Length: 466
DNA sequence: TTAGGGTTAG
Image 1 (cartoon, rainbow, N blue to C red):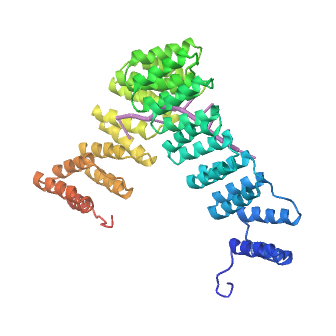
Image 2 (image 1 turned 90 degrees about the vertical axis):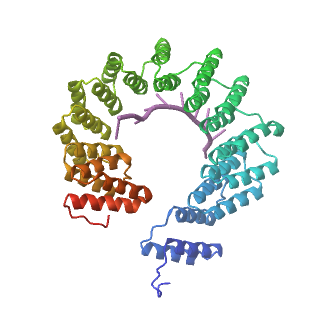
Image 3 (image 1 turned 45 degrees about the vertical axis):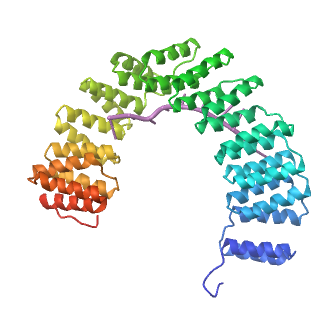
């Protein structure tokens, strides 16, 4: 290898070391270990572990099943699946594995998405007739990660036949898996079984299913389950309230959101940022200025203070109400704290543009570029629209070129602004509609045509590498 | 080395 200028690497040395070790030639193994060190090759994690194993072996220490489980995880983590399997087999055949170790192996495969291998370990366990609830739990988790939802449910159903009783963890896992996979109805069935088994002692599994219903916009089902939870005397916490408040905030229903805020307060739970952000979002949506201001004030006086999201909502609201000074005040305060983001700037830009205050709008656009806050298609379109409206055609073209360079896919709004630029530069409507047709026919060559038309009309050199 | 819930806009 050295002659061929293909110097050995860590793996090469590792193979040589373990080969000699296998043949009990410790001197040679040590020789290669030293050579490896001399070559300034740091053994990787696997090599280090293998060296350790070798040392243990030499000293006559037995490797126990806990070490084996750790080895499985390590080999799987390094993509050495076959080796992980060899170690598992060795211990499985020796028959000295515990339930903890079988489940640790199942979980090691399952966590990395190797559902088939996890299944194989589970089957080995089944053959040994040593199944406990642990193996079922980790296998259900593995099916969840592998998106085999039916298999997860079926495995649960088979537990009884194996004489194994589902525990809190079994139910929680399955409910969580089904809820987050958008099967709230199925999750609800297991939740009821869990309740009947007397295994529910907090609202977490209810919350998982409630939020799954909310995600699918089934608010009635979500509320019904919430009521069912109350009937079982399971106490809601701040997160459940947050889910429901946000659901009704999105639906624009102040009355219902308020019901849950009141219930939350009555339960002695203080609101947090998540809750107040939902409320500000809601009040902005329905134009409730006073209520939004109150919620914002509460946030400001809280420990964490108002965040960028809620401040942006307020800017949005003030813009709608043409309360420029108030919007500016929030904008400046965000800027002072270095918390203004792309949304903040874009909303200020829109506000000034809407009021016809182009000078100020353009200042915002310039700052956006300088601060690197121009990244989104919508922001680009806002800036581009402003430049074309204000007759700043070269800036419009520059912005468009930047967009193309940044691989931001332009849309119909982008080309509408660019069409205005061409029109104001004396290009006929017919020519513009031809450019539009070219773009619709073939995006790539159509884009080139637009760039060419714009650069020639604006007398800009343009590099068609773009 | 078994399981779990919420917010993000123009």
